[in-house]
Image (cartoon, rainbow, N blue to C red; front, side, top):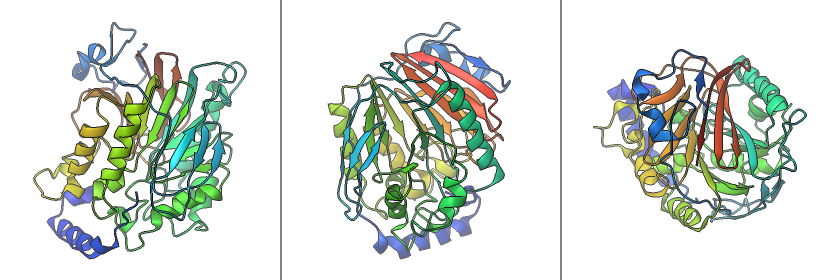
Length: 407
């Protein structure tokens, strides 16, 4: 959502009127801690180590818990073979799809000794978000990812939404696919999995558009690209000892204008309950907590007193409280254009990686391990056995911060 909303009652009125106009257009488908940046939270994280996991400075047991799952659901279908498994579905339908996860032993790209090929229980991936500008910074981040993955290995990358500014794409042949995706990441040697953001749904970021098919174009592009993967609006797969869930938080945010999100919530709760994977990782666009301009779910845009749940993120908070908190080990999102690793909340680790093409300030006050405003970048993650390591890099492939915690 545009941060201007919290500053202008007139824009809020226009926003509400637009949503009323579009109501009939809804789609009911579905450790070691080091910080090279002095901004690392020292005063605000006095008790951080104890609450979030094992660290080199004396932290112990994290408070995230749960056991993961190996299937997916969404709002369309396709068949896409990747190193992560085979996802099945049908792009012409709007019902739930299913995914059969295929466990693998690797295929990570990288230099000698850095791949996961042949090594059990090691998964490595990149997460970047809010990428869709087609600007110089996006291309720089893309090249930095190529460099880091060549050094350290990557099985896949994840894009956390707002893949195309300002109002999504107009079809699978929209020129933005080349300028804002294929060209910036043309040197990737691994698949990219994406989720939808509010800008991908259109309406210049409102997340509701007269063209209700905008998110479906991104699903359909899975059949066109060798790199892009979005088999459904929400989906999952498993790799090694990790299960991954890719959520459509904009549908949740704008419920009921883009359909009832109960189907997605029930799908997630059911999958998590059935999962037996050692690690459960979730991705979405909207944060549960964030020190960026958008802020915390339930109080987005500092508008918690405004009776618009699709503005304040009340729907998002309720969804995550019921279906995600304490059940997923780590939730990684975008929406705010910066890099953050916040102290655990509601039994889950929270990471924001939304600086894929632009970077903004951090006015919030949630306790954190690390945060970096005004610098584009991404996070590289390795899950090896019972150890999770995340390293933030800037757009020049410079290391900013590393943290490791154990299950």
